Image 1 (cartoon, one colour):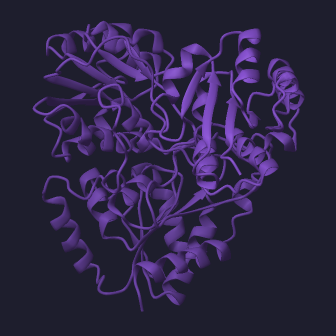
Image 2 (cartoon, rainbow, N blue to C red):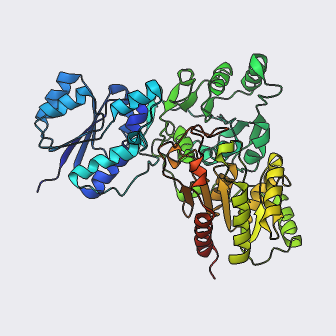
Image 3 (cartoon, rainbow, N blue to C red):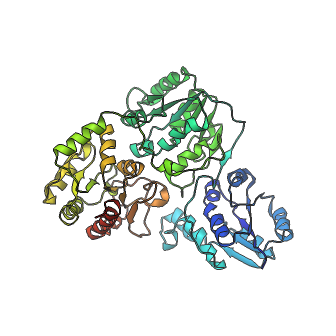
Length: 510
């Protein structure tokens, strides 16, 4: 039997094209000798140009030009991942014997947009529905995630110059700052000999100061002296005076893009999904199905198209600058009587109320971990979580170390590295633990793994409820939009304890 000659149609937006990448990986896994051609809009052809599993990228030449190509190229299989009237007609007229298509559920999507009428048809991620289409050909799904290298920069206007003074901008929350570190650590690998500066928020500056590869950390105090238009102009002036010749903008806000533009930095690289993408010289696709750390690494693809993620990128906190924080934490743990027992961290807080699992369940979990797993439990969090943790410690009925709001950021990083397990909501400490190689048990309510902010690397577990209303937002909300909060209610203490005990057995053998 001759190897399949496959044509894939996806004539939509950049993000949709990027999400098709696992399809090609699965097709090649099933038919190693198959040939895969992908037809996309001309402006998106560069995104798949470097994909190792795509043999040819065909720029869509219009309906009749496409039909001519389809009928004359000897394709044996056609996979329609677009599902509009145009591609339906193309596949009807193609004469190709084996056709498969994904179910777009266009009517359900339209009703949801117009009237907010939800439907079970919309509960599945677009990528999942792409993958379901492979079942028509008996192709098993063994790859479900995007990988760095599956997609490339959306546009490249000029050859890569030699940059000497590089700026990385990330002025979002702690988790976002942490997930920018792998990219920051790789800059000097891609541009040897450069000087690297990071612009970040005051409360995340220590994250980058602990990174050996970062030469200087600047603060964008956008709630203080850099607030408003006057503050923005002042911040831009400070950056202009430093002579940066390249900026990598990891934060997708319009303000960050505008700040880079006002600073007159001659080469600006950011994400195509940024509100200020038009202010960049080059943009990189922002694939929702990929881990956030790898999405940030993709900002380096215009400089190094062959860049790939490696094991070290998921353990980006293991080789920071030495300091006093680790020694201070060692001393405090010894004084608290923490010996050979497994040390389990619980992080019950979040800025977003709907991301928080119930305090009484954290208390019950702490009790069971102490009594049934012989673990020492430590509560983690910021100053705003003190009352929450105090209630949990009081209700647990067992000795618990409550260090909430009692560690500096460097000490929190050092403490997390000492844990045998972290049980946490979808939050910043989740990324800290994963970056140290500490097993993470993450409880996801309003958010989902598909948004990209899950614990990055191997050996972690996410518990979540399968509900049509998830996700209800990128970050969560102050209250459940549906009023039932089932996304957290359906995660039981028993489920979390058994998952925690399983991860502990792997981390701390008997």
